[in-house]
Length: 56
Image (cartoon, rainbow, N blue to C red; front, top):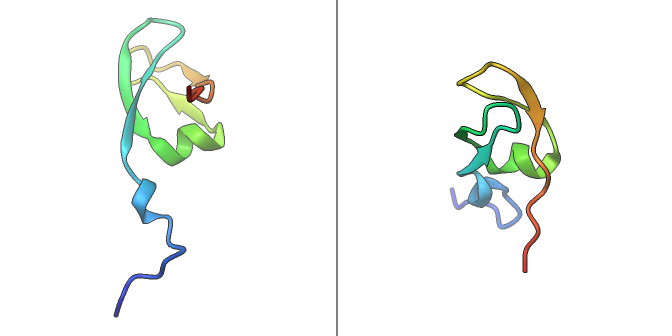
């Protein structure tokens, strides 16, 4: 069965985010970052929200 055109699987990849508490980088799902969901730092275990990246 062919994949539907409006499927969102094309953007399901990881992006690097910097934790505002410990300044360490970690990888999180692109869709979670775009939605503004809460992310958890694997280094310091603090929860934060990443600002949406500004595309130039």
